[in-house]
Image (cartoon, rainbow, N blue to C red; front, side, top):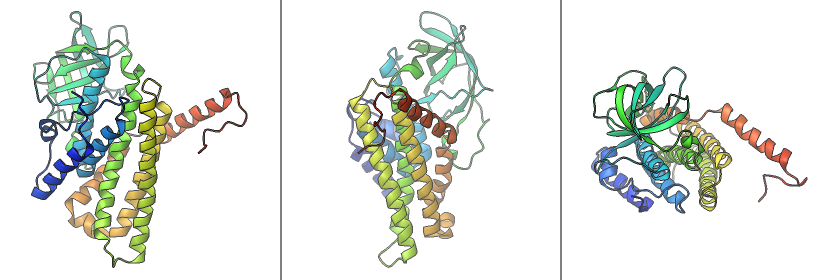
Length: 344
């Protein structure tokens, strides 16, 4: 399943789509084998992230679906017990747990379960064939299951999604009424496995790709005769993306060197850094090009609307506080007085 296509494969597919004026879909990426990515921590994490970034630069709603699909494949590969599915299956990963939407798992056999309840934030629910989703067993333990969407007891609603940005991801509510599913792993495995934070870091690669797509438009509109102000904005974009790219490469290398370690701090740091860089890119892009492309270039306008919504997958100050708490805890428990987490 994971034969690590080079990032250039995704770039070629995206370039062909742009050249011929056609949109890409998750179907196209799966059919082309672009989804056969290396697993996080398997030695080619950066290659995985480059593909995610290439797709995001083309279409952020699409990469939301593509990342969910590839994440589901990685979860099942890591935890084992993946159900038999047809070739070309399109997967989603739905593991958000808001307080007002909850799915219960009722045992119906050794691994067979039945799902009941509402799952919120189900990206691509109307277009995927299968999903990995989180829920709760009778003992109140968090669990994972794989479910086929084409069956009685699964109803994709049109509720819960009114966004203009990321409209194409269509993250609606799905209702389950005794739907058949297969349990994946053991209770608590989803967040306990190394791949949880490794995959979380990969979201930053998607944000980076979205920001780089916006930056590409700014550069294309900034010819050699542009004024100094536009060049200053382009320079600020270069600084923001250069630093984010360096930290993404460093984080991918760390994950590959420590495939079984807890990557929470690495993931939170790179996510927050890329979020900051993406906000910088949007700020300078709008000021550099003015209202024209925002009003007359549909791809640029959509990207500028998509990225702020996509970035809210970050928990903002809560994540900053959690990261700071980890750094502070390291200082408290460190035996060496002169040890600093910030060294070259």
